[in-house]
Structures are given as structure tokens and as C-alpha cells.
Length: 331
Image (cartoon, rainbow, N blue to C red; front, side):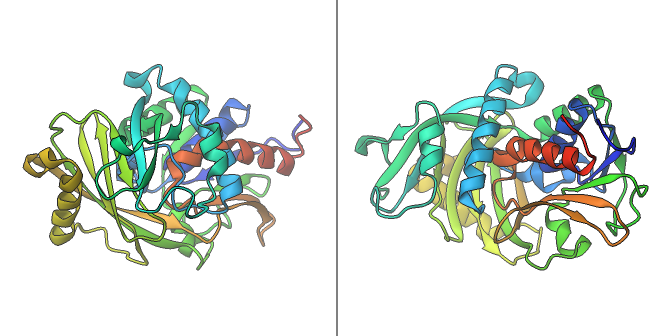
């Protein structure tokens, strides 16, 4: 049983915060989410939504979290209109030769059902290796609204409120769960959290049904094509320490050109939107419990880089365990 009856307050209304809040509420805790931004204004809303570990450390924990999330999203994909999640086949490629470098994802490759190395005739010109898989692809705005509804159904509440300090947020008996993403840079403060800027272009889909990603580790320019219900998402960039959320027209043109080299029909597609998001990168995800100077117990859950969607449910499970421990729950 718990040692007190205080609420659990979750800071952050993106995918990490909402999944953590849902897991806690469905575990029987009284949960309140504090979020400055509406769902469609969060970094999560800009995410391409492909379930695949990207720019996240440490790989060992990230893969375990990713496999758990894969299972949850695969189940959600049975109800795509409700959840925003679908199972879509695609190709992840690299300009490196198969086995040339250990990218740390061997456990992920082993865990994804049906994942296999791509044959040479399944790879675009210039790509020397790749993987074929059927994975979750999530319409993030639709999914975030689903998460908000699911939170409410579990008895949780959502409050639009900016949090400027971790201390004094709730009563002294409350447990905080800090899912502030890039906001942790100032809120904690944690100087190890920095932005990795991602720009994308949404175009009218000319008929592409599979996803495609070419994103070598460390590259600032990537190429991906993600078919979503609202259009074809073209990307992208990964620019460290770039804080601007303003789309750059020259970068957008370069993104379209890279995608068109692999899918020529994209060059003539009508542009629907330009978007920029700031991934909350950190040398390693911070998922740990801390007692704040005012005595409040705080479970930190931030720094997921480009894999917030991919690891959200796995991290939420660990948050539940840590909150139980913080509240003396003997289950």
C-alpha cells in the first residue's frame, strides 16, 4: 500500500508525459498533468512517428524500452482511427556495408517480428545495406489527443500551466514526474540537455505506401519518407544546438531534393506544410529518482533525443515502478 494519499504530478504534456501519466493513472494513482502547451504545440506533435530507436542513449535500455513500446503500438494499430497508430512496412537503409559498424541495435533487430536484411534489389541506388520491417507508424497529433482522452478515462486530469521550478509544484507529500523534455535544460536545470533541430516538409502523397529512412549515425542531413493520413512527411535534419523553430526555405528545398532522388514523384508533389521540432537530446536518458531540496520526491524522465515516441511506453513502465517505490507501495 502507499505511504500517503498525495497526488502524482506529471510535468509535460508531450508523448513521454502523457504515457507516463496514463500508466500511473491506470495503476491506481491520482494523476495531474501540468503542461504549458496544447498537444498540437508540443515537440511530440512534430515527430514523424516511426517506431525505431534513433539518437538515444544508452542503447541497452533504449532497446528494451523500444521493444515494450512496439508491443503497445502494435496492439493500438488494431484501432488506427481511434489511436493514430498503424502498422506499415518500410526500409531502413545505410550507406555503410552490412556489418561494417555495430550501431548497438542488435537486440532491436532480433526483437522486431519479421525484420530482415533487405535484398540488393530492394535498396535504392547508393545504399549498400538495409532492413525491411513492418513497424508502428503513428499520426502524432491524432495520437496525442487519444492519449489525453485515455488519461481522462483513467481519472487523470490535465492542466494548462507553465512550471518554472520543480520545487513547490505540489504538496510536500506529492511525487513529481519530470517529463519536461527540452524544458529540463532550464527547469532542472540540466545543461546536458540540448536541442537537435529537425526540419521536415509535408506534401500531398503521390501514392507512396511504404516508409523509407536513410539516417546514418552522426549525419546532420537525413532522408526519410513517411506516409501519414494527413500527407507524406519528408525529412529531415539533425542539427545539434540549433534552437530555432523557424523553417528554413533552403533546407526545405534540400529535403525535397534528397527525397526526390529516391522517389522522383515527390519532386512534383504539392507542399502542404513546413515544420520544425527540437529533439531533447542528452548523452543518456535521465530516468531516475531524486529527492528535491524541499523534500519532494521527483522521478526524472527526459532526454530521449529522437526516440521519444519509440521508447515512451517502456519508459512509462519504469516510471510506475519508481513512483511505487517512492510512495512505499508494496505491490
